[in-house]
Image (spheres, rainbow, N blue to C red):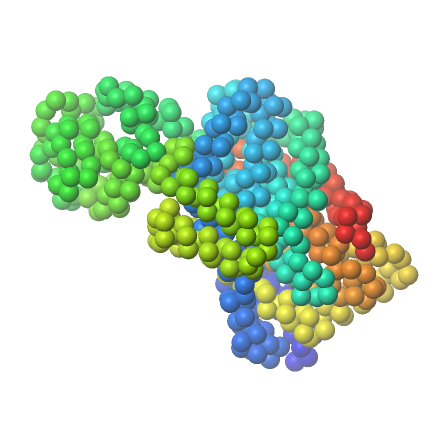
Length: 520
């Protein structure tokens, strides 16, 4: 089979598989790599090269850094401090929420920022009497805009920077994305603050996240505890509620309030049997009894994984809601060191990321198992599997062919028209499949167009990055959009009402503003 035909056929099948949403993304990406090998388009080392690509390794390391900020309570602390000063007015709350998530996204990724701040925003909205739908879609959209503030904001930034450096341009600086990101964040927040209330529905979601203060108060009431909230939940120690299941080895044992577990790591604060409190007396444990255990967060997490009890609220989940927990200072110092390495360019980005991830594990800020779990392997495999398709586009001349076809359509029109067509394709495809996959597919085409018309690749790569961030029209466009759907009470049609005008703004910005900063 002709290599160009094979490459286009594989691309078409991959898009169909992505859009169908029936095949896991990682399987599609691996299938692309294998198909390129079996059709003879690429050799085996080329087809599997993405799994050892420095860009993929850098992205994987950023997930570990993100986990350290989230699990040590840095994100929760920042959110509480900032949002506490916003008052109860919708507009001021929306602005504060959007600024906070945009800044957080720049450091720890879109999905990580939205996941960390979503519970806090829902709780604040409930306390202020504001419908969650008025704040959560702006939270997701502002995160997408914030991904353009720094190199680490999204894998797309890193990919575009590498493409530029490898094809006659240069890598974008760590802070260089802010030249596009800052005005876009300002415009995005201003638009949602002024028109968001009219374009967004007024509903509450069906699922409410954990409010740590109310949770601690509820435990004190149900178990008649005299301890204050700070003694129940603090950065070092916490409590967790467990239920004794049938066939538990604990059944038949005697326990009493204040008793330590056999290992001496946890203390039984109180117990309940049905609606009755068991206070000041020894009890023989029965199936269905509820026990309130206190100890360090690490010990609670370890014991919660045993088969003898069923955990009501995961200690890991509770711990993330406690501001500035153990290891927070180490996480911040290591983050600052990584940013300094990336900003100065002393070492390649992949090396800076690996040094940071390794330091977090060595200092026990993040446990080894926790580091592995924190990595979004779907994202890693998706990028690693799709990189060979980009290689095939360049090596077989497919990118040049598509570029020539697009240029034949516009004739002697200015490069702005070519840039505009490429951005429209990116915008449309980015609503249907991952924006990361979209850029991996279209970046080679953009490079071929820039080369053919004799202009710089820098504005084409930056424009692709800007438009790829405008995945606003559907809940499936990004994980962050889907993340806010249930707690915000959104329907599928709610997204395009706010998202369409924002997407047009991003498109116009990419075509007309980007070339002013990065000349054609």
